[in-house]
Amino acid sequence: MPGNIRYLSCQDKVTTAMNFVDAHLIRYKDKDIFFHMVFKSSVSMEDHMYDSPCFIYAIRAEGAISNPVEQIPIEQQEGALMRCGSYINQWNAVKPNENTEIIVVKLVADLVHKIFSEIDFDPIQNAQKSLLTIKANQGILLQRYMESLLFYFKNPAIVTDDLAYLKLKELVLLLLQLPEQDTVKSTLLQLFNTEQFSVVQIVEHHLFDNFTVAQLAHFAHMSKATFQRKFKQHSNLTVQKYILSRRLERAKQLLKAPSKSVADICMECGFSDPNYFSKVFKHKFGKTPRAYRLAEY
Image 1 (tube, rainbow, N blue to C red):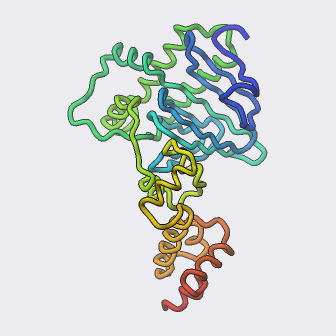
Image 2 (image 1 turned 90 degrees about the horizontal axis):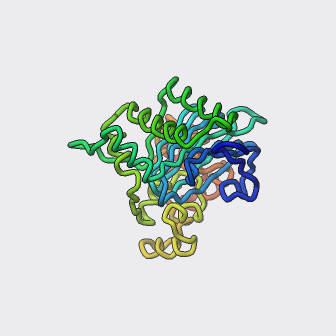
Image 3 (image 1 turned 60 degrees about the vertical axis):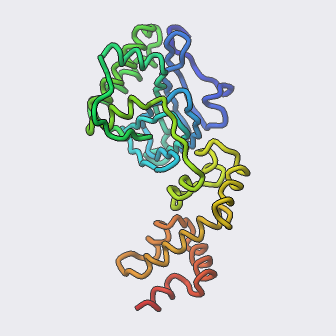
């Protein structure tokens, strides 16, 4: 394929084990920068981005971006700036039987620092704490930018190194227009600095998210066995039993207030199966959730 755009086949690392329909990338010299990926239905992407943070944008998708300490929902035509670290991206189709489509832009260190020097981007005084993930919704500006990238993916012959670099620089300038600019600037300056989180921090921040132990271990860049062992140094329970106990205690507290239904409490506390929720709640507290609520009034 001509120009700086390459088609990604099933053997490419970026698409392996994903239910992808179509995938291309735009390169700057020897660096892969812009990725356009289309998937069948839902997709979960586990990334260890310790050398290249990225910006990810939902063209036709909705889902969530999770880092070690938070889960951020992303709607269609929204994006997120992600610092170096470990992430799990979960994407679903917006409409039934529709494909899922995203664009990912890798923020390569030497190129980003070059852009910073060209726009006189220096550290600011009294900067806000940088975030691991910043949600971006710049409306029409960001939409038009992504539409221009789609145009280049469809017209590979016109893509040059200079054009690829200018498109990356344009994205940085757009990000600097996001609200809460002090936080955005601080985060951009810390893009390539990783933060370490303990196993306890990771578990505590994802108590009510539906992640497996293996996925929680991914956030810590550990194997499942290592994560379990380190967690047991802080608790006499396994990760699964600890999470279950905390969820049930939370449900118990919520059941004391009549403002929420048992079904809503079940979902809010991380239980996808109401029958399982009722069973484990009764095993721990001696009553079903409904019986417990009735006994409180």
